[in-house]
Image 1 (cartoon, rainbow, N blue to C red):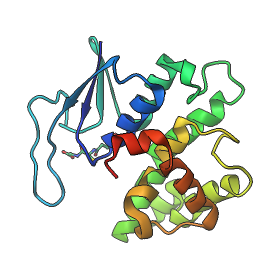
Image 2 (image 1 turned 30 degrees about the vertical axis):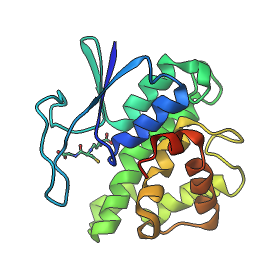
Image 3 (image 1 turned 60 degrees about the vertical axis):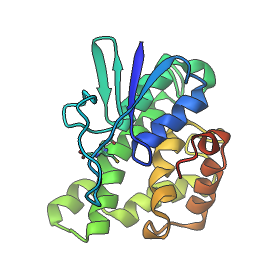
Image 4 (image 1 turned 135 degrees about the vertical axis):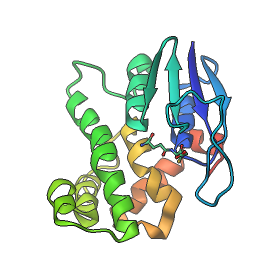
Length: 195
Ligand SMILES: N[C@@H](CCC(=O)N[C@@H](CS)C(=O)NCC(=O)O)C(=O)O
């Protein structure tokens, strides 16, 4: 059975929302664990098998998945009926994978670096910068409501997350803010109710 290790009000909340979006909360064992928080509260939970005690973490029998993008891909491949992913052979499979990997490999690192004020020519050469990342989102969301077109997908869920959590600390364009509001207005977000 799938087991999902979750800590409320953390990065694992987006995976919890996905479980609701996919309608599979009854097919996944949800284990709530503690994590060390940046305000000094909390602590690593021995019940969490993630090698660094982080969330989200997903196990599937003897297999395991870490990193949100990978967990989201794993779940949308495994439960394709909800139409939130793009299966192998789908004409948008590449676009879907690109947004998930761009989020993990570029957007979140760039957003953290921008927030901390850290810059270095090697960072800019490989990741570009926050404004460039915002341009990538804005050029798509100015012409369509969601990253893959007219329908919400799990790529929207992942990529809109930081804007929802950090609000004004994540400067964005009107098209991006409208998209974040659309993503936040979904029933699954209200059901999880952690934001
Ligand atoms: N890159 C990972 C980051 C996971 C992560 O850092 N999660 C935080 C919660 S928001 C955590 O578990 N922190 C506890 C710790 O660092 O020990 C992902 O996107 O899944």
